[in-house]
Length: 211
Image (cartoon, rainbow, N blue to C red):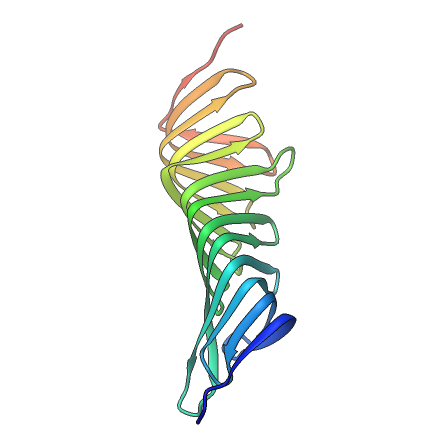
């Protein structure tokens, strides 16, 4: 059978995700795919699935074919100025691997995330960053992870943010600096409640400037 390659310019296509039970929407400057194949290449475009939108210079959507020839789409690999728009956050990086079935992704290469929060947003910079949109859990690690919320500057080895609980945990070699009060702290763990705008420090040493 001859293989047929199609190039769709400025067009929207839809891929049914058999194992996910949903629809993956693709909008791109150019999309190349093979009829009946297991790879779709997206150039200068975006894919949308549920509340998640992935924008990148290059995206490969990969799948697997069963004995009957039916294709199940499994993953999306994005490179080049990757931007991920989530329900409560925006993530940027150089590279990303996204699991279409579990609604989870791993980003690397100057990963940065901005989380919507009361008073002021939370901005995070890390080496790697993972998100799970089904459970609304975000995590990452770096040397160090750098977190900024208003006047609060936090560093640590890794973090986990549970959006449903509005709790933010930072672990290992935690450093906190509050520029509005000139307070400094070193701790083993930090727990932030975003709704209450409160912080708990464990195994802590702290410096408070007396006025």
